[in-house]
Image (cartoon, rainbow, N blue to C red; front, side, top):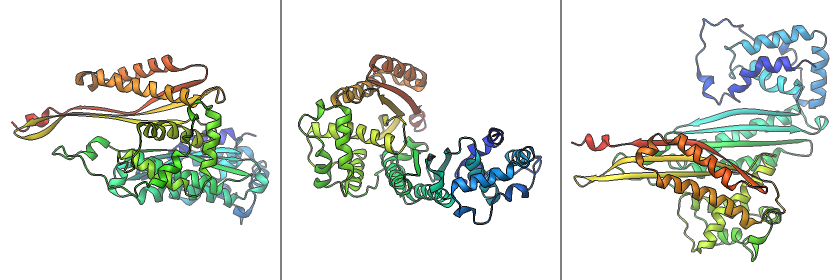
Length: 426
């Protein structure tokens, strides 16, 4: 089949995003561009009556039966749609071509991905939705399409339902979105069809959004506080000898706990407490370390395996630093640093690697990054992103071994000299 030519023609359209989520959709159409005005009727004729109640196998076969009568002509028409910059996702005909027709008849039709974003006030949520079709006879076109649309709508609900204070908390929102994605994945996946999503939530200009002009920290509104029962449920995994358990065996214990009623809600409340540094239950240092390191890593391994499918676990960390000076009795910010990095890691031997060895590996890298930052002067940090990347590469080489390996991505690096704040007062 020659559908590869269709994919190359529509590559730019497919990169724009799903459901008009990306900002590209808001760009006005220039009348100076050479474009066609509508999706060709011959292409729209492939939107057969009641096609949504056909199985994917049935619809795919019927489309190819039609296309085979004039492959060159159909490819040319699809190419014209791909080049038509005036057709955006608000055009339902173009939507049909981009998100229904092409993914269904493409050469690798049984595995597909869509990208998009949700922009809300000060935040941006980027997502990639993946699906895999294992039995095209047992999944209807409508079932696949609805799974995708419901997943996108679910992300929008999480973001649109957040208060300004909640939206400013990246860790809390990231976790809420991941929990939503996991629930939707479980709801719509079955033996014939699996769907999952990767998400990245960020606050635009996060440091300035959380600090008032007078230097005071914005008080974040929080949700429900974790109860003693919530913490005890999660800490039930901290059984005697757990550190010596293999990563694989501990992971199986986690899977059993995940299936208990109320786990997701308890986990969300505890993670919110941790992200806001507002744990209202008495914990030992060991219990805190277990929740923030051991449990979090295992949770991400679970997400990677059952939600993202073969994707590596990812741990997100933030480093913030702020220096102030007192001028005329007023505390004035003179330096601010914001670093957001992602530690992706792969366990190569889950049966041979112990939980303690994995945790020591993760702690070694994160402590190494923090120590490096603490040793840098403010001037070194101002333009220090490349230096930090070199240090993360060095840490990867130092800690990576035959059982576990890490890859570190710098998601955001902002360092600002704010001495002008003092000068403005003189």
